[in-house]
Length: 123
Image 1 (cartoon, rainbow, N blue to C red):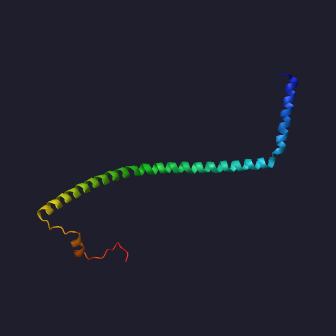
Image 2: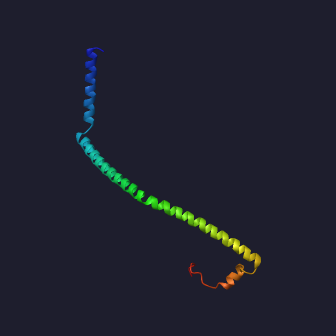
Image 3: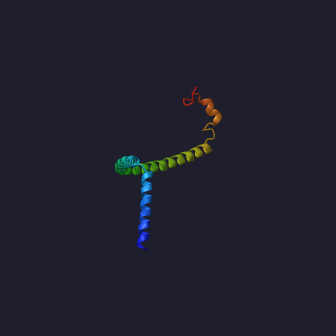
């Protein structure tokens, strides 16, 4: 490129940049900068709060997780015990019914025997 071409290109680019500067208001730019700094500060504060909350949640989870897993094992054990108990009760009931067919009343007899009001149903 020749020096004269470079000078003309530089002059044209300066002219374009000056035209762009007239399109943009400096006060508006300053207001945008202030708003961006304000938003940045709020985002940094929010980030700090969320980081603190994550640390606190991690700490609480570490404290509770062992209790939770222990209680889960206990509940599973209780469920298997209850399943075994109900299985035994069903087999005992079947044996009793085989030996004594009238030992357990049917549905119509149960309704006649049980005349208590149902407390769960609204009246």
